[in-house]
Image (cartoon, rainbow, N blue to C red):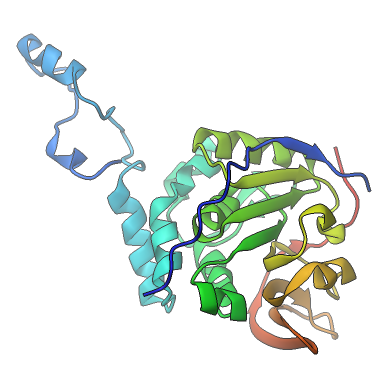
Length: 273
């Protein structure tokens, strides 16, 4: 049995600047206009508020996790994290009906929340690193591209500490609000240039990127711990498609392998308000 991640000291969510449905709820009936007035005090005393869409139900998330398992995601830790994070809280209100479909969705500013199957696959690949195999968790994690904060919420369940960098200030703020609502206390959100990584908290046992360029930035490789693993999209030399690249750092250097084709937004440098 894998060891549980160590509980770190409180790692409060804050703005850093870098230069450069509950179980059993279905047994309760919803408040309806035709219910007798005598039942009003019973309805008022319920501890779970009614939900017209039912998206807050644990069952909805578990069904998505089961679909991912059927489609080939085998790591129980990843599936448990997917089943535990309410994805509909990270998408715009007009799109919540699609929150648990296996599709990417726009989150504004030309960015998207990635397909659940792609997110789960990248997290599963991270668990193949030497450090993760030894400890059973992702350790200290660096995420490039916070987006709306959904993957950071998953990483918070799978690692001990998470540093997540976002170059778009509006998305940085959005991720902060989403994670604050979930009371996540082991994620640090950084507004900065993701191509530079985040040296103050290096080295990282796991690094995952949500944008891809023609090559991996040197700071990412330098900030990867020995025994750590990096997973990122990268453009193939002919420029025709993106694929996932997996990099393992050993005592004597780096080992690089290419995986399946993906489609992510382009990796960009700098910060954009």
